[in-house]
Image (tube, rainbow, N blue to C red; front, side, top):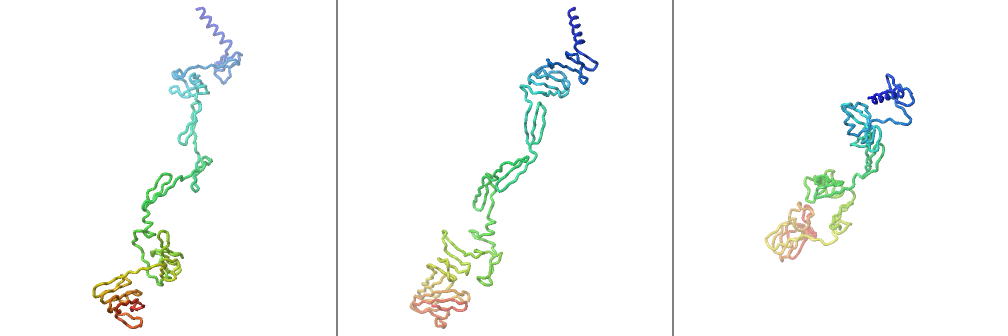
Length: 350
């Protein structure tokens, strides 16, 4: 009992001689100075520090109803921590960096950047301005005033045609097939034929009157010859200057010129009592006795027939004008005549 009384007297004497207390604040020092009026507790020393309670995170979280502003030193994270929450919902916030603490963390989500320092998070937009522009096949992007290197918009492009269907594949993505049939048939002659064309009217002056804008035709609209070819070799040419047609020649001097052999159909009649000429042949070869009827001259202007009589006796022929200018109605035996229609009369020309 005497020892306990002695210890209590020693502590009381120490407080009275070392510490100075007022009704408002307390000073702890070795100089006897009064406490600063702005502090409830003024601790000062030149060779000692202020030691706060030290505990693990488990111990810290076990403090019952910690006051807002309660300070501890967390030995698990090796950092000072203060309760920035309430007593019922404490939030322990680190104050200084410790050797094992993570006090600065950057993260991003979409266009938001988050910086968490000592448990305190702040956010800001990553992209404040962006603009895209393209030139030819190059796309460039400017973000926050900094322009990036241009990149190709189209890296691959393939066009394929299947029948009349056109498909374009850009950067591996194919478009829906486009049927070219309507466009082809509306402006071109199809290989299988055309329907619904506007038939050209007969020109007022052949060879000088131009076709109408809505009339359909095969040919040229400028001063160029029309050429037909096979195997990339020219076979027929129509001159744009005068309309002369040449087969086997590129410079026909007549309306129709053939540089090569020409074949005409021959009809050989071996039986019957009569025959009527039509437009199916140019040469008619008669080997027995029969009569010949010519079509009306007015229905076949400029049509030419070569009539060969290989029978001994003469044959009756529709009326024509002979080389002597007289009317005749017969062809002598074993003879031939060539006649032509002038649109009114059949005329013998050979």
